[in-house]
Length: 308
Image (cartoon, rainbow, N blue to C red):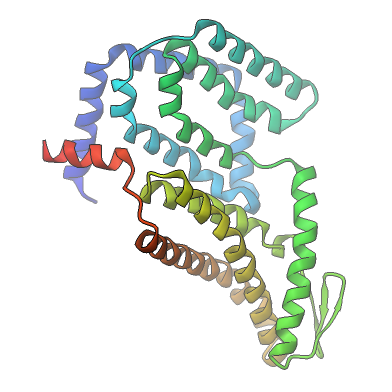
């Protein structure tokens, strides 16, 4: 661990707090209602991150969002304050209405979304539109930490299961492994493999989309490159999931089901994710070469701060 860097970061935080006491006081006022009103909501959300493998990527989103917000502190402080009192109150009241509707209907998605719009409304009330625009990315990035509703999740995962099953059976036949597909079940000569909901690829797709958002934000300033990278992460995730199922079938047929569904099945998930990251990084490097874009403004500000 680089203790000098940690000490330097701590010194920057203290200096920022002394120079912007009003901003830090308002930030505390933002956290107070969120802590009191949304305590139970955040507790259940953290439980979903910890217990549900489909949402485990949410554990990394809040710390990264705070880091992105910290990187934007120079631009945030450079903006002229022009509070939008009426607009801020309308957004705050609308967020609270959504929160209580979600509580009455036991709809966790609404209560969680309302916490982000509440923060946006308070930024409007205290600072104005320019400051909200600066912090738009960290706030929008937090949406990736909120699990999508079960209805939407099932609506998306079921077609993905069918796609993964059909494509994997074609790949297995291409690899001279005879297979008969019955719905989401692959009947091999010696055993059968069920492409369950967890194997639909939606879990890796959500994680890879979040990763592509981070990578695009860290590399480019323009929105075009970021959106293209996010779009390309979808076929990459789906294709690698199909390859994973195909390899599992080959191992089950030629060696043992115990090997295919045991250590390999768990370990291959990590291998696929790491491979997907390298593929995305390679794609982003090629994009930067043929479609160059300047780095984010925050990166340039950090370089100037280090040089100063």
